[in-house]
Length: 191
Image 1: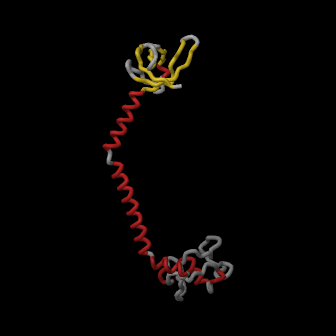
Image 2: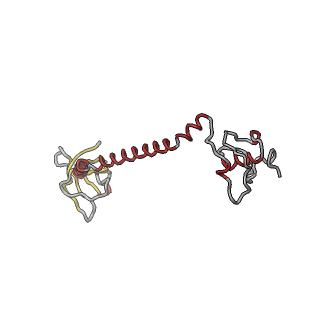
Image 3: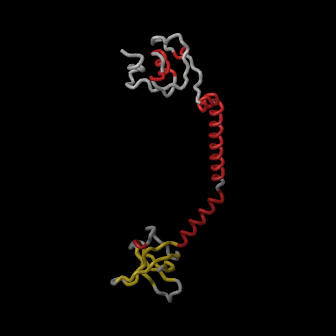
């Protein structure tokens, strides 16, 4: 059970003192510095809350002592700080701004890629010709104009040139199983 009282005597160099319980007839309860939860030294006259244990050698002793005045002043200061700080509002406003900015950027991306997205949802692939993807240091792909038309496997290709075009130009193709850069080796581009 918690009690309340006031520090009536404190001997700082020895680290102990006495508390007078509120409402008692001057009953003094021994308290050691180790009995204070915060470990901070008390001042005479401070209001405290505590629990009491009956020590066989020392008699009644206070423990789990909490400073009541210090807690109130800390909570009062916290309330004052909360009232003075409109920074939380500006923090919320900046958070809202970041969210709106993010949505705008997503909208711009979607708008710029509408043609690509709509063709994908229709099942079409954007028209890409082999002329756009020929590398100067590699052997040129045939003069035929291939287009990405959703083919992904070697069994769907008609020639080695088409398989090479799909491997270099079209996303999602599964034509180079051993990842050596030569597509459809068993069907079209064998060694």
